[in-house]
Amino acid sequence: MEESRTIEIVRPEACPEAGPGARLTKLDVRMVGKRVLLAGRGSSCPEEGAEFRTLWCPRDGTKVRLRLMCDTPRDCPRCYKRWAAREAARAASRLVAIRKKRSHALEARHVIISFWDHVVETGEELSLFAKLIYKTLLVMGAHGGLVVIHPWRHTGPLGDDCWRVGVHAHALVYGPVDASLRPPGAFVKVLPERESLAGTLNYLLEHAGFVDGGHAVRWFGSCSYNKTGGLVVPRLPEVVLCPLCSGPLEALPVEMRESVAWRPRTWGAWS
Image (cartoon, rainbow, N blue to C red; front, side, top):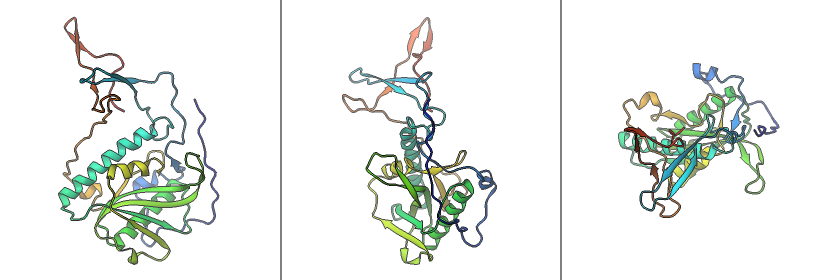
């Protein structure tokens, strides 16, 4: 098993509080003292004992042996990209369902927010920074949406695992966002409309910050779970394409042996 990788952080100043009225909920208290992690920078799952699923193409008969994700995919360097793609598809599907239910006229806006003197190292600081982002977005006119926090910024050549302190948050929100209403000390950038919500979220989650037992995607405002009761979000299956015809692969058909339906041992449920 590979050794877990750590990131050296230089802390300039103490992180200020998330503004008046900021407090930790019961869920946030569980995160106190836990260190903020970066997706895909934990221990790698071992090769031995890995489970696989065999898929096939009904059009040309091609078979593909696909490795299943481990129990901790967002920490694992082998599995975190598939975890990011899965979570991005689910979050994008929920955003679309909320837009249909709420009848939002505008598409989700991509907003980047940062503060000059913030450093996030623990679960408590991560929760307080998230609440500060919610408050900032609501003040600027957002109705609700999701937030992904990045405690570090990538530096150096593309492909190098080099990071520096630079906490900032990406948000996909509904509602008119007026950056001129931002509070003092906030740096806000509103990006143009995104071509693909899932593609944007996939990129954001591949280097998202989280704590063990916490979420990488945070919902707030009109999109929070307690304000979207009865929301029906379609469950999107993970689609694997055929390398020859680019069509979707399917599970191997059920075969009959001694009147008992069975599948090959390599078949298994998605993680």
